[in-house]
Length: 510
Image 1 (tube, one colour):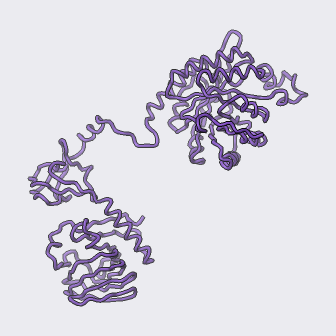
Image 2 (image 1 turned 60 degrees about the horizontal axis):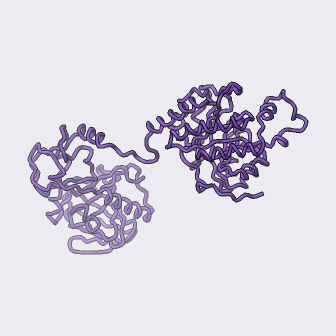
Image 3 (image 1 turned 120 degrees about the horizontal axis):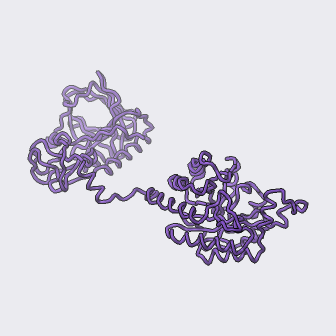
């Protein structure tokens, strides 16, 4: 039958969730079971940062055990289950005790009838034991409920795990996996905590936990599991008395407290998750005092941009000091007053201008136009951004170019973005030929203007003044004799006075 019960927490398992597994450690004595739940709940309340669940196990023994074997005390688990049998009223009392202590109630069914009973008894989380992980008749019944499901994976092949995860996802179930080893207790050398990494990588977005069966005196594994990103933790618990012995893989109250203290310390050491931590002021001050500050080498005039060649870096820094860590091709510093040699570059004597967003915008648009032109650009080619009147005016005056080769002959790929103009210039030595590959190029040679389209070829001899622009954008090849950096002469003298009219990028294609 289909159950419609809803989980009180909006079908979201809390994080982190620590699960006390009672299993058969109630020893078939409901009063003893109540004592275990109460004592471990008291421990849980000492760790308010954690969420806790208490887990029972349900088996309908009258049908779970074959009729011919019900009296076989020589078979380990038949003997164990039979001797620790609780009736329906007794198990419900355990559930009520869990809830009265403010813990989440969780249960593992080992047969279909137990699934229905778990829902009827008001549990809020369902667990699949490793031995039942591929028990498909049981899984089909479990997914008819609306409870979140946690599955243990001891001894499960990856292909089977893939199948079960797919089964749960297709049914839109809230599902989590717990790595564990089915040895009781598990030797340290066989805990295989790296399986947490495997599960997290293989099943993106799935909660991954750690079900522990190691010696209960061990507290390091839970800390390691936390560091690896596990968010669900399960441990068998119980209390030894004069009547009842405790098995060697279940934790007593003192061991459980130590286990949780180790987890608490691990979370404190691990710090924040999924975001960069916020540095303390003390940390920032310590780093600042070790950074090299910028000092000018020469007299800097107010309004002048301070370039890398104008500064040296040294300690000590002072309050408001611009440091080497602040310096990059994307951050420009313009003097707001005259600065004398050896004086520091400060927030108070400069204006900081960040051009990273502008450069990224240029690169994005250049790549888009190159894609439209179907051109192929050498992978290691450097991109040269020319901004003749400053990068702020690049969209009106400027171009970008890629130098493919520059020997006795030179080849460049030039991109003119829509609306851009290249100011008038001439060359004393270089002869160049423009081969238009894409778009329309308006080219003015001396005082004559003409429009060239794809396939057009035009040669410009030394001394000829030339300027160009494109309303829709253009890409063309410049094929020339050797390019010399001192062989470009602009007719507007303001451009020559601009010491900062080039930005070079080497890693821009990817």
